[in-house]
Amino acid sequence: MFRAYLKTVFVALIFIAFSQANAEEPTQDHDAHDTTVDGADYGEGDAVNTKDEVSAFIQHHLQDSHYFTLFEKAEDHFFVSLPLPVLLWDDGLQAFSASKFHHGETVAEHNGNYYKLYHGKIYKTDAAGTITYDEDHHPTQAKPFDFSITKNVVVALLVSLIMFFLFKGLAKQYKTRSIPKGIGRVLEPLVIYVRDEIAKPNVGEKKYRKFMGFLLTVFFFIWIANLLGLTPLGTNLTGNIAVTVGLALLTYLITTFSANKDYWKHIFWMPGVHWIMKIFFIPIELVGTLTKPFALLVRLYANITAGHVVLFTLLGAITVAKTDLSIGTGASIGYGVFYFVLAVFITLIELLVAFLQAYIFTLLSALFIGMAVADHDHEHEHDEEGHEIADVEDVRERFV
Amino acid sequence: MDQLINDFSLGLFIWQLVIFIGLIFLMAKYAWKPILNSLDSREQGIADALAAAENAKQEMANLEASNAAAAQEARAQRDEMLKEARQIKEKMIADAAGEAQAQADKIISQAQESIESEKKAALADIKSQVANLSVDIAEKVTRKELSEKVKQHALIEQLLAEANI
Image (cartoon, rainbow over all chains, first blue to last red; front, side, top):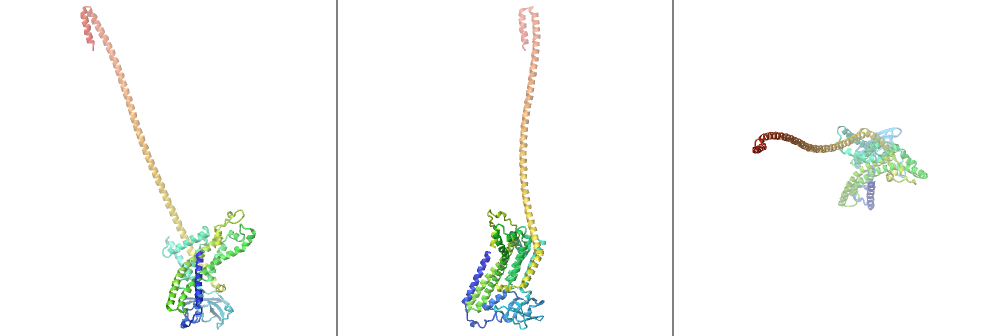
């Protein structure tokens, strides 16, 4: 937990440093670099080499996409990418390939309906592709329900496949040998780690087995997804709010449906306090059950998103140092080297964060489940005046 | 926050849930269950082996202790036997000595007795011979006395010299 805060502070510091760097260069004269820099947005005909374009590129990267892009050179309309199937519910199922959008350059026509891709979202439009905006610059066009196989869905499936084959292989090894070899030798201690360090101490020796399926799956899913996000594939699964909501929702559902009588008693009729306080505690405790998984989903989303933003910002800063700052070539090379070293450093931190976030998510899930299934025996912990003496578990609960 | 809600894709959310729940069940069935079972049985095996080793060690220690005890006992027994033998020997020697003494005493006493009786017999014999001699002498004396007194004395002297054995 403490490390997570440290990291947040660190990220915040870097952000502040960059925003100041931006402020220090208010309206630099771009004329000197006219040949390479224009006022266009990202993807509108030139390379990503201004601050705005880098920022837009990062925005684009953080979002889900209907393409699985490995490499792109938008200014030359050159893409090495896989268009993914688009599935819409718009008066029935509308299924077509995302290649019809031509990377958002054209309006896709399917079954007499016209769809336009705008900032990663599909809007219903007319043949000309007109999009009108409200005052907040949000399109006013109807958004059909989009359950396409997007990039993140593909990545989730990829992570699932990787996991399945890795651990199926490990499970198979045990049939012939008692100590696995190869990659299994790396995976086995991790499984034992999740079992002995996360599940057993937090859920309890007797009840942990039932939840191992969820805990192991969630740990390796998040970890592998985080690691894939650091590869040049440029995926961002765990930095997507919908994905983390899905993961945290499962923790919430498992906690709620496996909770025992004691858990509900502590929510609806807190023992050991005055009955007026008991009534006050009900909404607080009820909200508490929701804030726990909410903290989970925000923590994972924010950490991974922040990591990607910092990394992309540093990489973008290398090109920006070349084109967007009115400085000499030597200085820009110096900037570039500096940002590169910093980016390498941040990547190493992100490798740690990838594991740490998977660990924290799993640990806290195990903790919440443990609270719900624990056999409380608080009777001996009340003194004569009926005040509850805080025990370790309560302290831990407050801490979380 | 507005941006966050705008970014939230219900379609992706549903896909994520479906994929993830499916993955949990697949992994639980084909990976986690066999892996955890194997780990458990392996750990159980290790624990059993350790316990068995501990047992063997204990048994070994017990055996050693009992060996030592047996050796101790054997030594004690040997000492006891030696002691007994020594005692028997001493007793035997003592007994033999006693017996010999008794035998010797008996022999000596018998010898003394027989000597005594021989002596008595001899004395009696002597007495009877002395008596006979006395009678003979007396007879001869009485016979000669009647003839001559000097010859009588000479005879007595002669007879006494004869009788002095």
